[in-house]
Image 1 (cartoon, rainbow, N blue to C red):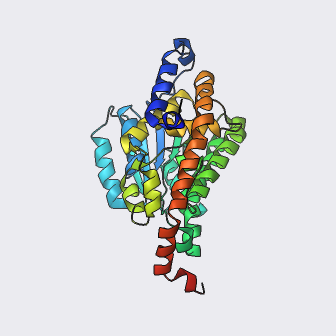
Image 2: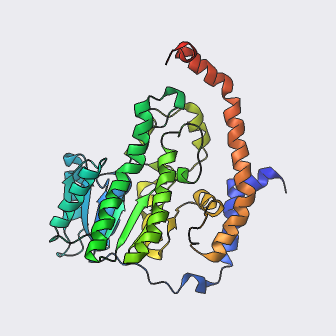
Length: 341
């Protein structure tokens, strides 16, 4: 069998599909699904994209929702959408306008959310806020480099910090859910300010998963691929051409598809949650000590990743090397080699 066939995404999909068909049905039973009905869910970044799609899914399932974002007008529009999906007069929908990039503002947002529910911490916290600004390292300022960690890591980490402490204090046996990226498993050209933040979120999630067992709090982390959201449109404004080319084979997900995959993983009780095949292969090949989602499926994915991931990496490296001449011309046009900075 040729390497071209093995690395063909269609081949991989068919292979996995055939193997999964053979899995005994009992392997999917035995776990009680998490039910959000009647629960209070806190969602950061809830005014658009993944956060809003998730809020709408949870509203349809009978949950009460608190959403937080920076812009009140977007929050107002999101609340109208949630109201249209109300399933019960007992559901409450609230919004709060806060930036979340510091410990103080994240704590203030969490306190406001709790205050609206008689001081009680939410039953689940979904940290969906974040932003990406891909570019070449050579184009970055120190501020750009730092902003990558602020917008990709701290904007979620401070929420988890506040939520974990208050939930532990109240004895709330709930859930904290972080959102990383496929780029939290690997990375490539263009993401030097973003991918490190997403890898850091994985480290935080795995640390909290262990520590918060002390309090009966579950921790999950989602690794979505490209998501077609307003954030994606914004990141394309700075994305290098070679990055776009490498990503061109990524089919991506809509916000609604990503939200459905995230919620399904939380309901199954998965720690690492993926919603597409390619990210699942990276999950299997770089899982470390994280719990398996399904022993049989992960063994299959391990085997496919053993073959497919090195082929993918080699393909990406070749594309980057072929781009050297064009990239040098780009740097010349910007005066990079003559600049004193």
